[in-house]
Length: 212
Image (cartoon, rainbow, N blue to C red; front, top):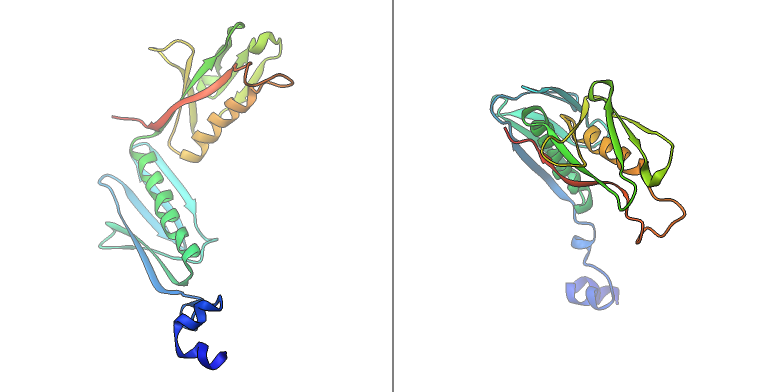
């Protein structure tokens, strides 16, 4: 069997094996390139990425990843490189580029999460305090308890001017902005009732970047 197996790939596959040269295919080198937008300044030092724009500065640490991260083309391009990686490990390259793209969007445009107050009988009352850093939710399902949610660092919350029962959460960091929206959402969960019938709560209706 072993003599036959080595003679052709087909014999290997018939016996449920991959040929030796395909068994653990590793890519020699894989590279992803990202263009730096105009008006954005980026520095990379030991896989610490710092991005500055008109809305402030954001930092992100990629030291836990086995990649090479550097600026190319006179600082107009970001390149992420990986050596001898298997296909699943290569996915982190694209992830790093997506994270850096989100940094660019944050310092240029800001992120926005719109949330709607949904209720059937007891009107939910949302009050913005602490200069847009805290939201207080009252009368959820008629409860007397005041739910206080503090926004994460660099995130602001405000009431929508054009839409009734809507709050808008904005920030430069997509992580902090989305997590702040999640904190508001999770503060108003219906307990001990059928959630198919009791649909009250604060839900994300849309999210994206703020258009200038």
